[in-house]
Image (cartoon, rainbow, N blue to C red; front, side, top):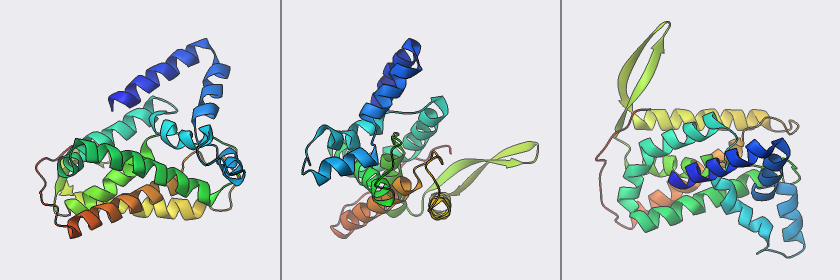
Length: 216
């Protein structure tokens, strides 16, 4: 969370210098599928383009993008980190972001628009949380017309609903021109990766239980 905040501060500094500086940095450090696949076609698997699969995870397109991602990471990430340990969770988080980025590249390998954001890595965290803590509950804000209420709901319901919405939106975006702005298949790929890793760790006998709940 701190790293994403620091990176966003750097982005704000670039933006203060002008839109061109900001756009140039996003293009350089974000994942551009067409450039990545071109580099790999040339055999440059360890090129700077491959590095963008990591650097893109710490960049965000605005305050809402950043705060929305960090909210999900704060709610669900702590328990997953407790289960995996700090070093293990860091490796898992970064690997989840890489897999998520590759999933988006696979769907549209010739796309020219940069993909940025921590949502793929956070989606992996959500997938792991669902497997590790299927019986956990979170406190959710539910709107009822002009009123709202805090309700404790099963985390599994929230996460499965989120995944189904990503899947439906992702399928609906297939065949559309670049411009949707949301990397749905990065979310899908990250979530599936996280769930599979958690499932494998559970099979290997990793213990633990939910100890905290958050506000969603």
